[in-house]
Image (tube, rainbow, N blue to C red; front, side, top):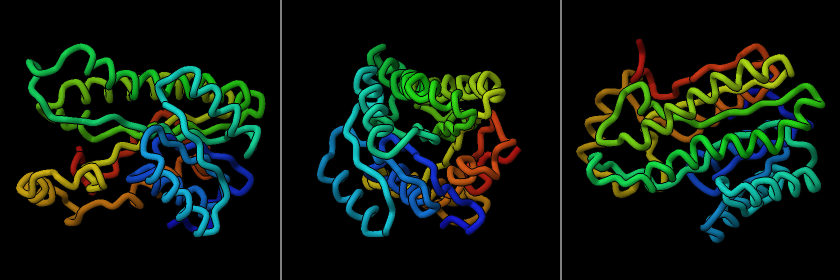
Amino acid sequence: MPTQSLRLDGRVALVTGSSKGLGKAIAMALGAAGAKVALNYRNDEAAARAAFEEFRAAGHAGGLYRASAIDEGEVSAMVAQVERELGPVDIVVVNATPAQPLKPIEEYDWAFHQAMLDYFVKSPFLLARAVLPGMKARRRGRIVNIGSEVLARGVAPFSAYVAAKGAQNGWTRSMARELAPFGITVNMVSPGWIPVERHKDDPAEMKEEYLRGIPVGRWGVPEDVAGAVLYLASDEASFVAGVDLHVNGGVTVG
């Protein structure tokens, strides 16, 4: 949960893919810190409405917006609607993700690789292009990409996802340097394996093996990731740019 010092009062945040899992926890944390939060979803309207009802029941302010994070027209229209209804966007959290099956390279085709790149390179680009004019004019902004520890660990057989996360990491580093002079920070939070809804069918033996390798000795929870995002979105992180903050209990130390 946010501390009293990490406040976002008067800020507007947009969190893509926030109807469940990590995105939902991030939206809740930013809302609890005082931001108006635009929750975004693409497909599961029932889950999105349930998440938004929970968000509002907690006393948070914001709105629910349906749009594909990889469609240029829909991203532009969503940002415009958010700014009309909630105000200028100060914080963008790039969280939306596709399915992530583990498959050997022979079973991939380029369309699958392209889908990974669309979510982890095209989506950050589209969102940044939509919000940057306002952020530059105000000389303040926060862009937080949700990455993954898989890049540091070289997880296999997962080459398409790992490659796309590597590209997202490179984009983050370059944009951090480009935008820092405008008071806009760009950072990445890279979670470890944190069981959420989409992990419910993962093999128990894989989970047990991973848990044994976490130095902290426990599973991560979505709120661990949300706290890291909240910090990077806050004024306290105004001198932090271009970092890849791993939230995995020490799995990738060194």
